[in-house]
Length: 136
Image (cartoon, rainbow, N blue to C red):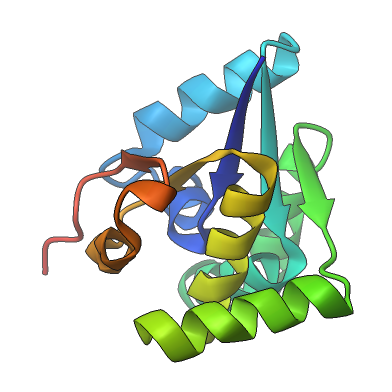
């Protein structure tokens, strides 16, 4: 079974029906069929809620997150995982939330689903399913 770690922008794109939403939808369908495992760090989930709520309002954002809750595993980092994320931040100068999703993907062997080109800094140690970059 294929394992994916979702960056915040993957779910936001899906909720907003932006470029790449179709790829995320296909992954959600695979998860519903138990053919894939989708994970997101709760740190990134916070970012999803914040970004999408700015667009659609807090209640709509909470409702959207609830709709995918049965298909996406919400992962809470333990202290060791937080320290590993911090080490990634120091070494690769990534944003804080990006470090948590990168740590999750690397630890679980998952493919990271993202539109953020900054993850290329990690090279081959991180498998990436690239969504289209944001235009404008």
